[in-house]
Amino acid sequence: MSPPRVLVIEDDPDVSALLARHFRELGCPVAAAHTGEEGLDLAFADPPDIAVVDMMLPGIDGREVIRRMRADERTTGCHVVVSTVLDKDEVRDLADDLLAKPFRQSSVARLVSSYRSSVSGSSVPEEE
Image (cartoon, rainbow, N blue to C red; front, side):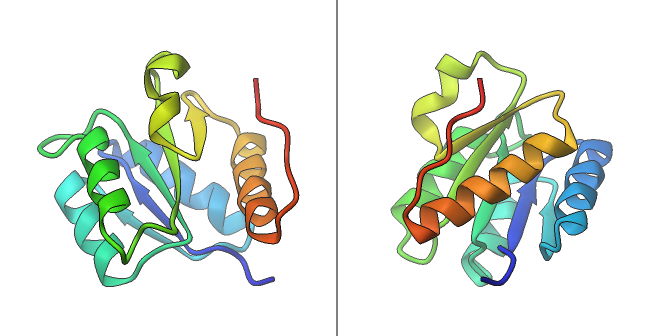
């Protein structure tokens, strides 16, 4: 299985760069966007396998980005991951997976493993 293509939608350049580095270390090609609008443009132009979406974005926030991605046939199959400092219960229903901030490289590796398992049909336990 080839590595998943990842889109990181994160307004903090340091967080975005760190996430991109972690995914690249796992062999994943990564595109990055710093606003919700830019993220949607990239997602619709070249749908990623995994989209990591920050909830608190300027302009179109993460909730709206995810709503639009779920509603568009080009991105309905995308594995959406919420990246947030918010309470997990506030965002659990929005996404396929969660990445709590601050995150570690092991959390990113778990996301890639979870994606691969969902594609192959096996299950991976959710991170607590």
